[in-house]
Amino acid sequence: MDPLQNKRIIVGITGSIAAYKAGELVRELKRGGAEVKVVMTEAAQEFVSPLTFQVLSGNPVYTNLFGPEGRWDPEHISLAQWGELVLVAPATADIISKLSLGLAGDLLTALTLASQATIIVCPAMNSGMWENPILQSNSKRLMELGFHFVGPGYGELASGKIGKGRFAQIEEIIGKIKEVLYPKRNLLGKKVVVTAGRTEEDLDPVRVLTNRSSGRMGYSLAQVANWRGGEVTLISGPSILPPPFGVNLQRVRTTQEMREKVKDTFREGDILVMAAAVADFKPQSLHQKKLSRGELSLKLEPTPDILKEMGEIKGDKILVGFALETGNSLDRAKRKLEEKNLDLIVLNDPTQEGAGFEVESNVVTLIWRDGRTEPLPKLPKLEVAERIWDRIAEILK
Image (tube, rainbow, N blue to C red; front, side):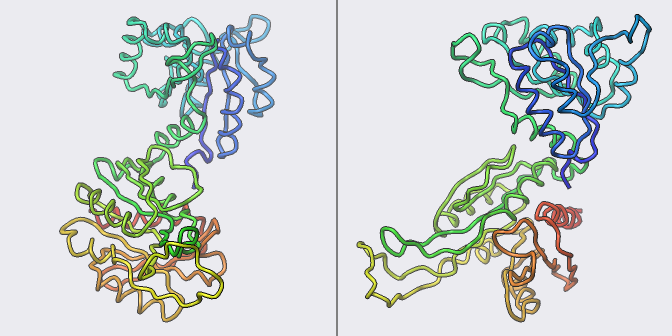
């Protein structure tokens, strides 16, 4: 399930030219299933109308410590108690300095001071302001107090100059929110390696031997591992999927390239999950010119068995494999688990409805070393990844 689902998030918008970008941020939070309430400072309203955020969030926009007609309404307390996360985006130099001093002169600073929720700050300003030692000191103090920072990024600023101070990318901010909201942190301190996607073996200068794997299952496993606090390296064959947030993506193409990268990375790792659809065969020889229609004979040889090699050297590390089978699948998967010295194997049959390549869901059976099996119903691949990491956490215990 998306970590944003049913989360109560307060978005605080301050007086930066980047305030217009907060609209897309609110939209993405809503798209992920979060309930969003927006608080705007007086300066922020000079850049964007509160009505914009009322429409995008589906809630009234809060702008003042005081209610209508001068009536006192302690919204800074009620909002502070409501929100599970406070996101200050964009955050100006002014708001960062006020927060670092514990000032509470407006609704946003007051509710932030009163809140016990996680707070994320997304700076956006001129590079000279960001690099000022006073602001750096104030930002460092907030980090020491447990505030999370996303950005600023480097690039063209509103002034037309190039420097550090740009509002972070929306996907980067959303990724950080999901990370801090995720309830299970049972991979903290663990170095995790995940393989994903397909490999390709060259036939001639223009053709390859490959399969239909999109990489979705492996990318989902890497993302969930990151949310759980793991230091994640994702070794991916060719895929059009965007890199998961917070993950060290290492791209490869051939089976040999994946083999070398896995060996190097797993040496320092604690857990390896081999979800990649590695090509089982490659041509005995590479044709230097494009094959013509008449050349129909193709001699193949097996590629290196990376999973088996890792099983031989894993020691007390955890090794999880995948078995893509279409006949007598359970027995073959159990035999593969034993032969390759795995701690857990994930069996899936691409012929089942809603399973296999190029779809968002999967139907798998989890198999342990002691012979236990756990068939799972058709689930989104992100949720399948959740279940797999739950079982790996049991092994870790």
